[in-house]
Amino acid sequence: MKHAVLASAALFAAACASQQDAAPIAPPALKAVASAPAAAAPAPPAPTPQATSTRTDYAKGETWLCRPGIPNNACDVNLDATIVQADGSTQVEKFSADPNAPIDCFYIYPTVSLDPMTYSDLKAGPEELSVVKTQLARLGSKCRLFAPMYRQFSLGALRARMSGGAAVPVNGAPADPNNDVNDAWNWYLANENKGRGVVILGHSQGSGQITRLIAMQIDGKPVQDQLVSAVIMGSSVQAPTGKDVGGSFKSIPACRAADQHGCVISFSSFRDTLPPSATALFGRGGDGTEAICTNPAALGGGKATAPKVYFSTGEREWAKGKKIDTPFVMTPGLVTTECVRKAGHSYLEVHFNANPSDLRIDDPGTDITGANGKPDAGWGLHLIDANLAMGDLVDVIARQGAAWKKRIPEAGHSQSIR
Image (cartoon, rainbow, N blue to C red; front, side):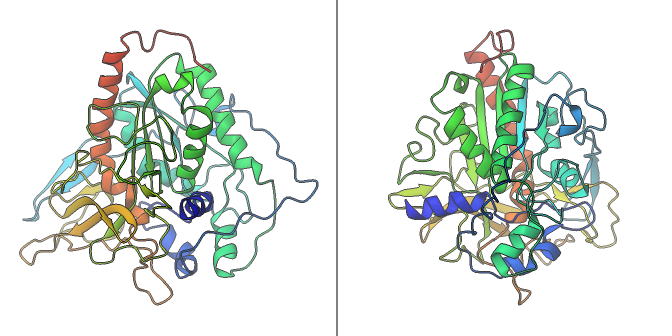
């Protein structure tokens, strides 16, 4: 499983960023990174003798981006979306969260930190605020939301490691991200879970963290009974070829139906016109294993012709002569998605249905680009993995939560499980 191990290692430092409301974070920050060969990212620098890991107190509200009851909750934001039809007509979809949601969502964000050092601090910047808005907050209609800050491997450190960019000052210790994620999870279990069902989700570096967390602390343990599902995006969760369980997780299978719970949804997205390069890490299989691909818009397989995609509005003209005032936009029918297996990769294949008679934008152009300015086949549509699936994840998580509650009728009334 050499390739699988390389992919898992790389996820802890894999470059990823979400679209900001005005413009994507990643292209200017990652342009040099994206042009580098898609091989395993070098490990973070070895700690100096005095670089011991300190612990973070997750009882403090300021150590969380999102948590019920904290001030300045980053998930309490405007998520309204403008639906733009092919004829250019528009309609606003209003969003509202459910403060009494029956299950929880615990989220670890991807590599977004612009802090000028190897490991980020615990102060939320615009980049962390933006990514939870794009990748998590919409699930607040179905979950109570928990998103801890953690001392992640930063974008600057990644750029220096992968493309020879300028080095950033060394700080902290390589154990800091793992310890933070572990401590946040354990604090949540001890203080907030109280027997509730929980969805654990992440993207890229965050996916590497939750894959590690689930494998070490949840898979095969009593707390697995609380798992509604795991949503692992922009990653390469492994299973034996042709099977749904037995690789990265010994007892957590791939989700193949919306009413299935205790399972994993995982995918990485690439254009149909630019499939993964031979060395692309995302969606890559190992020796005797393959990456799991489960399309939230079609868990049973086949092509999804109407996935519920939420693009960040940004500065694009989504339809001729139309001004969009909401932070998100939907373009029904513009995108088609399907899980495919090709040339050693299993991934979410994305087709943009450009049509001359369609008044909308043909293609939002959300690729990571190489030094030549062209889309990089090693990264694909990594920036918008979550956008492509968000509306369907909302629906699927609601059904999974209901199925979990039905199986465990006393859920939410038992004591916390550690």
